[in-house]
Image 1 (cartoon, rainbow, N blue to C red):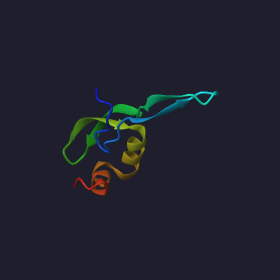
Image 2 (image 1 turned 180 degrees about the horizontal axis):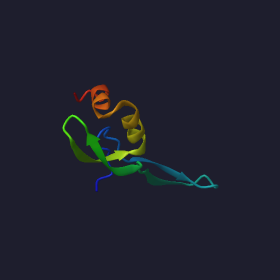
Image 3 (image 1 turned 45 degrees about the vertical axis):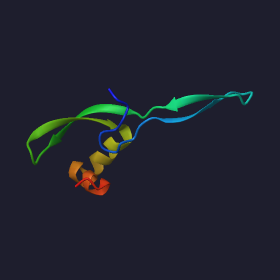
Length: 74
């Protein structure tokens, strides 16, 4: 499974681990991807999405079509 949100497109970002001695080594910050089944009332069916936890909270608040409209997809 690719570490990318299906709705927002959020993926891994890079940064540094910083030790107490201020040594820096490269690392990746992975998004909190969750696999969810979303009910679409208009089509009377479920779809499966891999979305971030933040996108899931927005989805609960606005709904799927409201969120797609704000993202500029629809």
